Amino acid sequence: MTDALKRLSEEGVAIWLDDLSRQRITSGNLAELIDQQHVVGVTTNPSIFQKAISSGDGYEQQLTDLAARKVTVEEAIRMITTADVRDAADILRPVFEATGGQDGRVSIEVDPRLAHNTAATIAEAKQLAWLVDRPNTLIKIPATKAGLPAITEVIGLGISVNVTLIFSLERYREVMDAYLAGLEKAKAAGLDLSKIHSVASFFVSRVDTEIDKRLDGLGTAEAKELRGKAALANARLAFQAYEEVFTSERWAPLDRANANRQRPLWASTGVKDPAYKDTLYVDDLVAPGTVNTMPEATLEATEDHGQITGNTIAGTYEQARAELDAVEKLGISYDDVVQLLEDEGVEKFAVSWNDLLKSTEAELKRLAPSEA
Image (tube, rainbow, N blue to C red; front, side, top):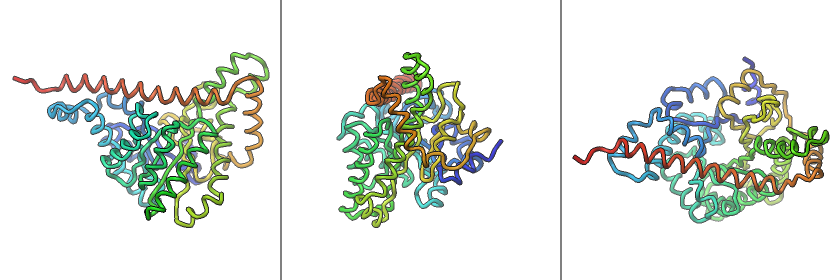
Protein backbone atom coordinates (compact mmCIF):
# COMPACT_ATOMS: atom_id res chain seq x y z
CA MET A 1 0.00 0.00 0.00
CA THR A 2 1.07 3.57 -0.68
CA ASP A 3 0.22 6.85 1.01
CA ALA A 4 -1.43 8.02 -2.21
CA LEU A 5 -4.82 8.77 -0.64
CA LYS A 6 -3.16 10.79 2.10
CA ARG A 7 -1.11 12.71 -0.46
CA LEU A 8 -4.19 13.29 -2.60
CA SER A 9 -6.00 14.72 0.40
CA GLU A 10 -3.00 16.90 1.27
CA GLU A 11 -3.05 18.30 -2.29
CA GLY A 12 -6.52 19.68 -1.55
CA VAL A 13 -8.59 16.99 -3.29
CA ALA A 14 -11.57 15.85 -1.22
CA ILE A 15 -12.01 12.06 -1.55
CA TRP A 16 -15.64 10.99 -1.72
CA LEU A 17 -16.99 7.47 -2.14
CA ASP A 18 -19.31 6.93 -5.10
CA ASP A 19 -21.37 4.23 -3.43
CA LEU A 20 -23.74 3.60 -0.53
CA SER A 21 -25.70 0.68 0.85
CA ARG A 22 -27.27 -0.21 4.17
CA GLN A 23 -24.77 -3.03 4.60
CA ARG A 24 -21.92 -0.54 4.19
CA ILE A 25 -23.49 1.61 6.91
CA THR A 26 -24.40 -1.07 9.46
CA SER A 27 -21.21 -3.12 9.08
CA GLY A 28 -19.03 -0.17 10.00
CA ASN A 29 -17.41 -0.18 6.57
CA LEU A 30 -18.25 3.47 5.84
CA ALA A 31 -16.87 4.58 9.20
CA GLU A 32 -13.74 2.54 8.47
CA LEU A 33 -13.24 4.21 5.08
CA ILE A 34 -13.56 7.62 6.72
CA ASP A 35 -11.12 6.66 9.46
CA GLN A 36 -8.52 4.84 7.39
CA GLN A 37 -8.81 5.89 3.73
CA HIS A 38 -9.40 9.65 3.94
CA VAL A 39 -12.98 9.43 2.64
CA VAL A 40 -14.78 12.67 3.51
CA GLY A 41 -18.04 12.38 1.56
CA VAL A 42 -20.46 10.04 -0.22
CA THR A 43 -22.35 10.33 -3.49
CA THR A 44 -25.31 8.23 -4.56
CA ASN A 45 -27.34 7.97 -7.74
CA PRO A 46 -30.32 5.89 -8.92
CA SER A 47 -28.04 3.14 -10.25
CA ILE A 48 -26.26 2.82 -6.89
CA PHE A 49 -29.55 2.53 -5.00
CA GLN A 50 -30.95 0.07 -7.53
CA LYS A 51 -27.94 -2.18 -7.01
CA ALA A 52 -27.97 -1.83 -3.21
CA ILE A 53 -31.68 -2.41 -2.63
CA SER A 54 -31.98 -5.17 -5.23
CA SER A 55 -29.23 -7.08 -3.41
CA GLY A 56 -31.62 -7.11 -0.45
CA ASP A 57 -28.91 -7.00 2.18
CA GLY A 58 -30.27 -5.16 5.22
CA TYR A 59 -33.57 -3.96 3.78
CA GLU A 60 -35.90 -6.85 4.67
CA GLN A 61 -37.27 -5.47 7.94
CA GLN A 62 -37.99 -2.01 6.56
CA LEU A 63 -39.62 -3.50 3.47
CA THR A 64 -41.75 -5.73 5.70
CA ASP A 65 -42.90 -2.72 7.72
CA LEU A 66 -43.61 -0.71 4.58
CA ALA A 67 -45.60 -3.62 3.13
CA ALA A 68 -47.65 -3.83 6.31
CA ARG A 69 -48.48 -0.14 5.96
CA LYS A 70 -49.44 -0.67 2.30
CA VAL A 71 -47.40 2.28 1.12
CA THR A 72 -46.93 2.93 -2.57
CA VAL A 73 -43.76 1.63 -4.17
CA GLU A 74 -42.53 5.18 -4.78
CA GLU A 75 -43.04 6.12 -1.13
CA ALA A 76 -41.24 2.94 -0.10
CA ILE A 77 -38.21 3.82 -2.20
CA ARG A 78 -38.13 7.34 -0.81
CA MET A 79 -38.29 6.02 2.78
CA ILE A 80 -35.52 3.50 2.13
CA THR A 81 -33.13 5.79 0.27
CA THR A 82 -33.57 8.77 2.60
CA ALA A 83 -32.99 6.49 5.60
CA ASP A 84 -29.65 5.38 4.13
CA VAL A 85 -28.63 8.94 3.32
CA ARG A 86 -29.66 10.17 6.78
CA ASP A 87 -27.63 7.44 8.50
CA ALA A 88 -24.61 8.07 6.27
CA ALA A 89 -24.89 11.81 6.98
CA ASP A 90 -24.83 11.09 10.71
CA ILE A 91 -21.67 8.98 10.32
CA LEU A 92 -20.05 11.82 8.36
CA ARG A 93 -21.23 14.56 10.72
CA PRO A 94 -17.86 14.87 12.54
CA VAL A 95 -16.15 15.49 9.18
CA PHE A 96 -18.81 18.07 8.35
CA GLU A 97 -18.17 19.88 11.64
CA ALA A 98 -14.38 19.67 11.32
CA THR A 99 -14.35 21.13 7.79
CA GLY A 100 -16.80 23.93 8.47
CA GLY A 101 -19.47 22.28 6.33
CA GLN A 102 -17.35 21.85 3.23
CA ASP A 103 -17.05 18.06 3.40
CA GLY A 104 -18.77 15.32 5.37
CA ARG A 105 -21.59 15.46 2.83
CA VAL A 106 -23.93 12.86 1.35
CA SER A 107 -25.70 13.40 -1.98
CA ILE A 108 -29.15 12.15 -2.92
CA GLU A 109 -30.66 12.64 -6.37
CA VAL A 110 -34.09 13.85 -7.40
CA ASP A 111 -36.21 11.33 -9.29
CA PRO A 112 -34.39 11.07 -12.66
CA ARG A 113 -37.70 10.94 -14.52
CA LEU A 114 -38.11 14.63 -13.61
CA ALA A 115 -34.91 15.70 -15.38
CA HIS A 116 -36.79 17.73 -17.99
CA ASN A 117 -39.39 19.23 -15.62
CA THR A 118 -38.20 22.32 -13.75
CA ALA A 119 -41.13 22.76 -11.36
CA ALA A 120 -41.22 19.10 -10.39
CA THR A 121 -37.44 19.05 -9.83
CA ILE A 122 -37.70 22.04 -7.47
CA ALA A 123 -40.57 20.42 -5.56
CA GLU A 124 -38.70 17.12 -5.30
CA ALA A 125 -35.51 18.83 -4.10
CA LYS A 126 -37.43 20.61 -1.34
CA GLN A 127 -39.12 17.37 -0.33
CA LEU A 128 -35.83 15.44 -0.20
CA ALA A 129 -34.14 18.12 1.89
CA TRP A 130 -37.08 18.00 4.31
CA LEU A 131 -37.16 14.19 4.44
CA VAL A 132 -33.45 13.69 5.07
CA ASP A 133 -33.34 16.67 7.42
CA ARG A 134 -29.58 16.81 7.82
CA PRO A 135 -27.44 19.92 7.24
CA ASN A 136 -24.74 17.86 5.50
CA THR A 137 -26.94 16.69 2.64
CA LEU A 138 -26.54 17.71 -0.99
CA ILE A 139 -29.52 17.40 -3.30
CA LYS A 140 -28.45 16.21 -6.74
CA ILE A 141 -30.03 18.00 -9.70
CA PRO A 142 -29.08 17.05 -13.27
CA ALA A 143 -27.54 19.73 -15.48
CA THR A 144 -30.24 19.54 -18.13
CA LYS A 145 -31.73 22.69 -19.61
CA ALA A 146 -34.71 22.25 -17.27
CA GLY A 147 -32.35 21.62 -14.37
CA LEU A 148 -30.60 25.00 -14.66
CA PRO A 149 -33.46 27.21 -13.36
CA ALA A 150 -34.18 24.56 -10.72
CA ILE A 151 -30.60 24.89 -9.47
CA THR A 152 -31.02 28.66 -9.13
CA GLU A 153 -34.32 28.33 -7.29
CA VAL A 154 -33.15 25.61 -4.89
CA ILE A 155 -29.89 27.39 -4.06
CA GLY A 156 -31.93 30.57 -3.57
CA LEU A 157 -33.93 28.73 -0.90
CA GLY A 158 -30.72 27.90 0.96
CA ILE A 159 -30.63 24.21 -0.01
CA SER A 160 -27.17 22.89 -0.90
CA VAL A 161 -26.90 21.22 -4.30
CA ASN A 162 -24.76 18.71 -6.17
CA VAL A 163 -25.23 19.42 -9.87
CA THR A 164 -24.81 16.14 -11.75
CA LEU A 165 -24.41 14.85 -15.31
CA ILE A 166 -22.23 17.69 -16.61
CA PHE A 167 -20.34 16.79 -19.77
CA SER A 168 -19.87 19.97 -21.79
CA LEU A 169 -17.84 23.09 -21.08
CA GLU A 170 -20.68 25.31 -22.25
CA ARG A 171 -23.18 23.59 -19.95
CA TYR A 172 -20.71 23.80 -17.08
CA ARG A 173 -20.52 27.56 -17.46
CA GLU A 174 -24.34 27.66 -17.43
CA VAL A 175 -24.29 25.60 -14.22
CA MET A 176 -21.93 28.06 -12.54
CA ASP A 177 -24.12 30.92 -13.74
CA ALA A 178 -27.18 29.20 -12.24
CA TYR A 179 -25.34 28.77 -8.95
CA LEU A 180 -24.31 32.42 -8.79
CA ALA A 181 -27.87 33.48 -9.62
CA GLY A 182 -29.11 31.29 -6.78
CA LEU A 183 -26.64 32.82 -4.35
CA GLU A 184 -27.73 36.30 -5.44
CA LYS A 185 -31.35 35.34 -4.70
CA ALA A 186 -30.37 33.89 -1.34
CA LYS A 187 -28.43 37.04 -0.48
CA ALA A 188 -31.38 39.25 -1.44
CA ALA A 189 -33.57 37.11 0.85
CA GLY A 190 -31.18 37.67 3.75
CA LEU A 191 -29.95 34.09 3.97
CA ASP A 192 -26.53 33.19 5.40
CA LEU A 193 -24.50 32.37 2.27
CA SER A 194 -21.80 30.63 4.30
CA LYS A 195 -24.27 27.80 4.97
CA ILE A 196 -24.97 27.11 1.28
CA HIS A 197 -22.65 24.68 -0.49
CA SER A 198 -22.50 23.19 -3.95
CA VAL A 199 -20.40 20.93 -6.13
CA ALA A 200 -20.55 20.57 -9.90
CA SER A 201 -20.16 16.94 -10.97
CA PHE A 202 -18.21 16.94 -14.20
CA PHE A 203 -18.26 13.43 -15.73
CA VAL A 204 -14.95 12.14 -16.98
CA SER A 205 -14.56 8.54 -18.19
CA ARG A 206 -17.67 8.45 -20.38
CA VAL A 207 -16.16 11.18 -22.57
CA ASP A 208 -13.20 8.94 -23.42
CA THR A 209 -15.47 5.93 -23.94
CA GLU A 210 -17.53 7.71 -26.59
CA ILE A 211 -14.74 9.65 -28.30
CA ASP A 212 -12.36 6.67 -28.32
CA LYS A 213 -15.07 4.62 -30.01
CA ARG A 214 -15.32 7.23 -32.76
CA LEU A 215 -11.52 7.49 -33.04
CA ASP A 216 -11.31 3.71 -33.41
CA GLY A 217 -13.89 3.94 -36.17
CA LEU A 218 -11.58 6.26 -38.10
CA GLY A 219 -8.68 3.86 -37.66
CA THR A 220 -5.93 6.30 -38.64
CA ALA A 221 -2.61 6.73 -36.85
CA GLU A 222 -3.58 10.29 -35.99
CA ALA A 223 -6.85 9.09 -34.46
CA LYS A 224 -5.07 6.37 -32.49
CA GLU A 225 -2.70 8.97 -31.05
CA LEU A 226 -5.64 10.88 -29.54
CA ARG A 227 -7.17 7.93 -27.69
CA GLY A 228 -7.55 8.51 -23.95
CA LYS A 229 -6.86 12.24 -24.11
CA ALA A 230 -10.26 13.88 -24.56
CA ALA A 231 -11.69 13.23 -21.09
CA LEU A 232 -8.74 14.71 -19.23
CA ALA A 233 -8.57 17.64 -21.63
CA ASN A 234 -12.27 18.33 -21.14
CA ALA A 235 -11.98 18.20 -17.34
CA ARG A 236 -8.89 20.39 -17.26
CA LEU A 237 -10.60 23.05 -19.38
CA ALA A 238 -13.55 22.85 -16.99
CA PHE A 239 -11.17 23.69 -14.15
CA GLN A 240 -9.92 26.66 -16.17
CA ALA A 241 -13.51 27.87 -16.50
CA TYR A 242 -14.01 27.41 -12.75
CA GLU A 243 -10.95 29.56 -12.02
CA GLU A 244 -12.25 32.29 -14.31
CA VAL A 245 -15.76 32.41 -12.85
CA PHE A 246 -14.69 32.35 -9.21
CA THR A 247 -12.25 35.22 -9.62
CA SER A 248 -14.71 37.33 -11.65
CA GLU A 249 -16.27 40.69 -10.81
CA ARG A 250 -19.66 39.00 -10.39
CA TRP A 251 -18.23 36.64 -7.78
CA ALA A 252 -16.53 39.38 -5.72
CA PRO A 253 -19.61 40.67 -3.80
CA LEU A 254 -20.74 37.11 -3.09
CA ASP A 255 -17.26 36.29 -1.85
CA ARG A 256 -17.42 39.29 0.49
CA ALA A 257 -20.75 37.92 1.77
CA ASN A 258 -18.96 34.67 2.75
CA ALA A 259 -20.37 32.59 -0.10
CA ASN A 260 -18.69 29.28 -0.91
CA ARG A 261 -17.24 28.47 -4.29
CA GLN A 262 -19.00 25.70 -6.16
CA ARG A 263 -16.24 23.09 -6.21
CA PRO A 264 -15.59 21.02 -9.34
CA LEU A 265 -16.26 17.34 -8.62
CA TRP A 266 -14.71 14.72 -10.88
CA ALA A 267 -17.36 12.03 -11.37
CA SER A 268 -17.32 8.83 -13.40
CA THR A 269 -13.67 8.30 -12.47
CA GLY A 270 -13.67 4.52 -12.80
CA VAL A 271 -11.56 3.65 -15.86
CA LYS A 272 -13.54 1.73 -18.47
CA ASP A 273 -10.73 0.84 -20.89
CA PRO A 274 -8.25 -1.79 -19.58
CA ALA A 275 -5.59 -0.26 -21.84
CA TYR A 276 -5.39 2.71 -19.46
CA LYS A 277 -4.03 2.75 -15.92
CA ASP A 278 -6.89 2.27 -13.48
CA THR A 279 -6.03 5.43 -11.54
CA LEU A 280 -5.85 7.68 -14.63
CA TYR A 281 -8.75 9.96 -13.67
CA VAL A 282 -7.38 10.41 -10.15
CA ASP A 283 -3.63 10.82 -10.73
CA ASP A 284 -4.10 13.22 -13.64
CA LEU A 285 -6.85 15.43 -12.16
CA VAL A 286 -5.19 16.79 -9.03
CA ALA A 287 -5.84 20.41 -8.07
CA PRO A 288 -6.69 22.13 -4.79
CA GLY A 289 -10.34 22.81 -4.11
CA THR A 290 -11.65 19.86 -6.12
CA VAL A 291 -13.53 16.68 -5.22
CA ASN A 292 -12.95 13.22 -6.69
CA THR A 293 -15.79 10.79 -6.10
CA MET A 294 -14.55 7.24 -6.66
CA PRO A 295 -16.15 3.83 -6.88
CA GLU A 296 -14.59 1.54 -4.29
CA ALA A 297 -12.44 -0.25 -6.88
CA THR A 298 -10.85 3.06 -7.90
CA LEU A 299 -10.37 4.06 -4.27
CA GLU A 300 -8.57 0.77 -3.59
CA ALA A 301 -6.47 1.05 -6.75
CA THR A 302 -5.41 4.58 -5.81
CA GLU A 303 -4.50 3.47 -2.30
CA ASP A 304 -2.48 0.56 -3.71
CA HIS A 305 -0.58 2.17 -6.57
CA GLY A 306 -1.81 5.70 -7.23
CA GLN A 307 0.86 8.17 -8.31
CA ILE A 308 0.10 11.55 -6.76
CA THR A 309 2.77 13.96 -7.94
CA GLY A 310 1.24 17.32 -7.08
CA ASN A 311 -1.02 19.55 -9.17
CA THR A 312 -1.60 17.88 -12.55
CA ILE A 313 -4.02 20.49 -13.92
CA ALA A 314 -2.08 23.76 -13.64
CA GLY A 315 -0.31 24.66 -16.86
CA THR A 316 -2.23 22.15 -19.01
CA TYR A 317 -4.87 24.38 -20.57
CA GLU A 318 -3.14 25.12 -23.88
CA GLN A 319 -2.38 21.43 -24.47
CA ALA A 320 -5.91 20.43 -23.45
CA ARG A 321 -7.45 22.87 -25.92
CA ALA A 322 -5.14 21.60 -28.66
CA GLU A 323 -6.20 17.99 -28.00
CA LEU A 324 -9.91 18.74 -28.16
CA ASP A 325 -9.37 20.81 -31.31
CA ALA A 326 -7.47 17.88 -32.87
CA VAL A 327 -10.40 15.56 -32.18
CA GLU A 328 -12.78 18.07 -33.75
CA LYS A 329 -10.55 18.39 -36.84
CA LEU A 330 -10.91 14.67 -37.42
CA GLY A 331 -14.63 15.19 -37.90
CA ILE A 332 -15.75 14.15 -34.41
CA SER A 333 -18.24 16.72 -33.16
CA TYR A 334 -17.66 17.71 -29.55
CA ASP A 335 -21.18 19.15 -29.28
CA ASP A 336 -22.68 15.93 -30.61
CA VAL A 337 -20.69 13.79 -28.17
CA VAL A 338 -21.55 15.77 -25.04
CA GLN A 339 -25.25 16.02 -25.92
CA LEU A 340 -25.39 12.29 -26.56
CA LEU A 341 -23.71 11.61 -23.21
CA GLU A 342 -26.14 13.87 -21.35
CA ASP A 343 -29.13 12.19 -22.99
CA GLU A 344 -27.72 8.73 -22.26
CA GLY A 345 -26.91 9.68 -18.67
CA VAL A 346 -30.47 10.82 -17.95
CA GLU A 347 -31.86 7.72 -19.66
CA LYS A 348 -29.57 5.31 -17.76
CA PHE A 349 -30.61 6.75 -14.40
CA ALA A 350 -34.28 6.62 -15.39
CA VAL A 351 -33.90 2.97 -16.42
CA SER A 352 -32.22 2.18 -13.08
CA TRP A 353 -35.03 3.96 -11.24
CA ASN A 354 -37.68 2.01 -13.14
CA ASP A 355 -35.84 -1.25 -12.42
CA LEU A 356 -35.78 -0.26 -8.75
CA LEU A 357 -39.52 0.44 -8.83
CA LYS A 358 -40.20 -3.00 -10.30
CA SER A 359 -37.97 -4.94 -7.90
CA THR A 360 -39.23 -3.05 -4.85
CA GLU A 361 -42.85 -3.54 -5.90
CA ALA A 362 -42.22 -7.28 -6.16
CA GLU A 363 -40.68 -7.31 -2.67
CA LEU A 364 -43.61 -5.37 -1.19
CA LYS A 365 -46.04 -7.89 -2.69
CA ARG A 366 -44.00 -10.81 -1.41
CA LEU A 367 -43.85 -9.41 2.09
CA ALA A 368 -47.45 -8.14 2.26
CA PRO A 369 -49.37 -9.65 5.19
CA SER A 370 -52.17 -12.04 4.27
CA GLU A 371 -55.68 -10.63 4.49
CA ALA A 372 -56.93 -13.67 6.42
